Image (cartoon, rainbow, N blue to C red; front, side, top):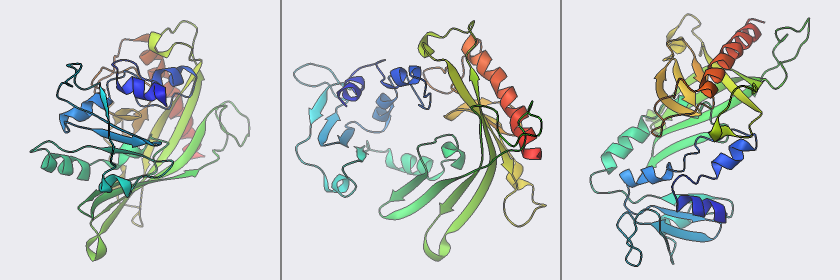
Length: 292
């Protein structure tokens, strides 16, 4: 869409912000600077989508003297892109800077499977280098009807706006006879709460409710005495992982207002304090649903 291209050519003009305010909330950023981070590894990122092909250059463009934000049309689609391009696909090509390849390969190959846990629109992530699959993460969701939401007498339903599921994360490494597969199961409970009238947040103006979620690790595999699957860092997510750890043995996710680096939560903002309290409710409801 034209508005999306304009956002890529600007700073602080994310189109996700407007869609957050419309109430969906399932977007991982809204500061309008996320795409610019690709310049750490690529001097000429390119986008191919819906018949439009263009790139951005780190070096200043001749006619404007500006770098990073001036799009340049691409006349020929590279063969590497054409093989993956379809009518409903977007392909982003990042020609790597000298010396960046090894680090990028290493970080992609070691990506944590939980990265997909709260990304509802991504079911599979595959890292392929020179035709060889380094790692593949698949997210499978099995919805569950929890028995008796708190406050319901004998009811076999969830709280209004809540959702419950068993989420399985499958990680495959290698290929052929040398391939390995690991499985992690999580009891996933999402809880929606209406925004209190006294909580004001300019970056979430117009929002009336938000959903937060907890993911409790479950035993996986045949050996029910194996507790390794229950080990959990307690990392806090804002759809993608932050560098904040809660010190509780399960994972937390909410639409927190973050620092520009996405690594830390602005802990004293009323919006974030409200979400923190909502997560406590989500845990209680989710744990009781698991027991039942």
